[in-house]
Amino acid sequence: QVHLEEFGGGLVQAGGSLRLSCVVSGSSFSLNGMNWYRQAPGKQRDLVALITRGGRVDYAESVKGRFTISRDNAKNTMYLQMNSLKPEDTAVYYCNADVVDGSKWLKNYWGQGTQVTVSS
Image (cartoon, rainbow, N blue to C red; front, side, top):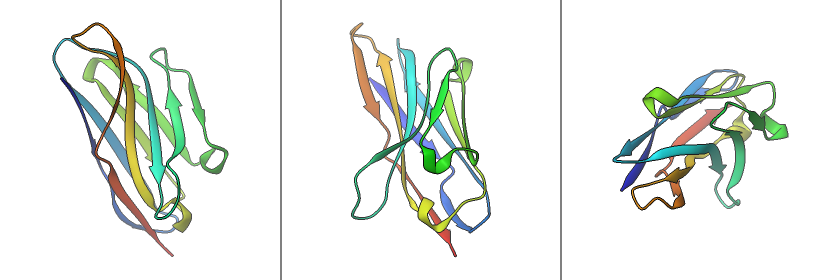
């Protein structure tokens, strides 16, 4: 069984910064691509940023230049540094990962999400 847990959400003023972490735990697993998604009230869940195991990254246009995704494979942890936050960044942020788990199959896992609220 693999478990993803997000940390670092909270309330911040516009223009401020937050750093999210996603810690992956379990036994006998190997992480592949990892992603951050977000879902605002009444809206669909959208991809914010992705990072491959090799470190290639990509971002949604709305966060380019403000957010930075990174990962530490030795710690099974992914990060999202969010700078110059805007009220429209308010959402629940979810960690997502492709994992080869104990079954040896590639599966997709989600965290429970962490709330980020940006006040104007």
